[in-house]
Structure formats: structure tokens, C-alpha cells
Amino acid sequence: MWKKKIDLVGQKFQRLTVIEDTNRRNNGNVIYRCECICKKETFVTSQSLRSGKRKSCGCLAKEKIGKLNRTHGESNTRLHGIWKGIKKRCKNKNTKNFKNYGGRGITVCEEWSKSYVTFREWALKNGYHESLEIDRINNNGNYEPSNCRWVTRKENNNNRRNSRLLTINGETKRLREWCDLNKISCNTVRKRLNNGWSVEHPLLFSKRTATKITVDNETRTVEEWAALKKITVVSIYDRLKKGWPVDATLFQKSRQPVNLTIDGDTKKLVEWCHIAKIPYTTAVSRLKAGKSPEEILLPWVK
Image (cartoon, rainbow, N blue to C red; front, side, top):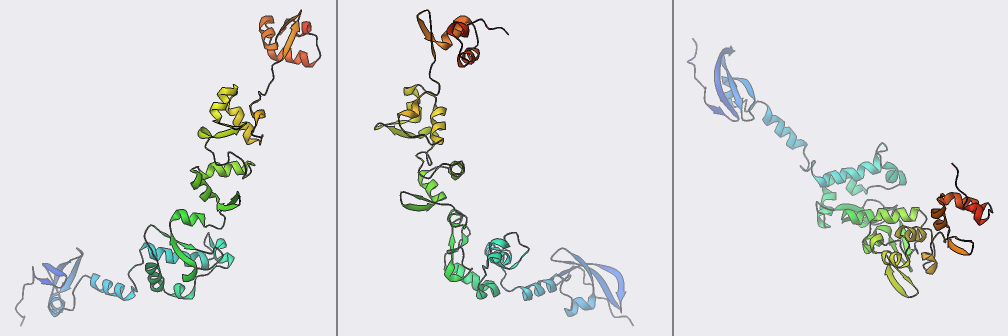
């Protein structure tokens, strides 16, 4: 004789809520369609529901396995990423930066290499913050507590192995430090140095619009000198870049006016050319060829 059917529709068993009777049986047990709290549907017998054998669609078991495999629960954190990064560049030969780390003999100390938790404890005790980066005090040293610290990105860049050092007036600083001190772009100064400027150049750290130079104990901006000496600003800067001395010769006009005397009348060559209606370049060519004043001003034939 069949046992009296117990309707389980609407009842909740652990994570499962019974939705409907499927009118199917398994060894005499009703098979119900159920919805798990994770919104996934599954089919469970009445016996499995009432005995507690089935508590979910399977998600509960997955969560328990995940907890067993999880050692610290921080695999997706920034700090864990930093820990993985230092190990990767020191141990993995296929990593792009391996040549700059593991390839140079730099290693991660054993206590950090084996345990993220140990690394995390050191980091939190030594000022770690989400905005900071790990930095080796000695660029040729290893990743270990005595040689590491937390710094800003700017400080980290200053401590790179390829940071350029400049000694000015007996004081040595990194290029970026000199640029920050003088409030000028590093790219500008680096370009000047690459173009042959010396570290003693008076304009190495100067911004073009505010550059001041002193000549005969008088200090003015380049723009002011240019206006005073009636020479272009570009000419002055070009000469300074070429290493001209900062003295009166800096303001000499590049082309001295050529005077020409005809019948006792002296004028600038450019003025004679205007009167004779000939190109200035033609007159200069004739002058260099040793032509007489009259021949220089002969009508120009195309």
C-alpha cells in the first residue's frame, strides 16, 4: 500500500525552496522542482529534502571547498599583487623585467617568498598604504625587510638604478630632484643635456620666458635684452645653446650692414638695391666676385 503523500510545495529546506511536484517518482519518493537561494533550480526527492541530505543546488559544497583552499582571503588585494609581482620578476625568466631583477641576481628573502602572511605583517607594521609602492633602499640589494620601505611613486622613480645624477656647485642630486627644485620639466632638461648642454650652462634649469642673464653687472630677462639691443630673442637663445659667453658679444647682430659709396654718396647696400631695383642676393654675389660699385648695381636681367 502506498504511503500517504505529504505535499512539500512552498516549504523551505536549508537553502532550497520547493516550487512544484513534478509528478515523477524515484524509488517511491516524489521528485520536486526546487529553487536555491542562489536562484539556480534543481530537482530533489522528498526523502533527500526531509532527511537534510540535500541542502542546496551544490553551491554550499563549493563554498566550503573554497574556504578550505583559501589561506588568507586576500588574493585579489593590491598588497597581494605586490607580493606576487616581486616574486615574479625575481624568479620567472619569462617575465619582461626579469633581466633587471632576477637576471641581476636580486632575490626575495625566504620568509617572504614562502609566506604572503609574513610579508603582509611586515608591510602593515612598516607604513603600507594603498597609495605607496615598495622600494629597495639599495638598488643592488634583495627584497628583504632590512632593504625595503614604502614610498610614493615619485620617490620610487628617483631611486631607480638608471636615475641620472648631476653634480652642480659640488652638490649631487638626481635629475628629477634638481628639476623639482627649479620647477621645470625633467623632459626639457634631459633634452638639453642630450643636445650637449653642460651642467654648468646658465640656462640649464631656466624657463625660457623668465630667463635672466647678467652682462656688465646688469641683469635683465632675455626678452628685455633683445628689445634693448634690437636683436631677436631666438638669436640670443640659439647662441646660448651653442655655448656663447654671456657678455656683450652675445648681442652682436649676425650680419653687419654693408656700405657702398658711389660718386661720394654712401648708403647701405640694401638701400642701393632698392634704388637700383635689383635683388639684394644678386648685389652680394657681385660684391663677393670683386665687381666695382657701378657693376654691382647694373640692372638685373632674369
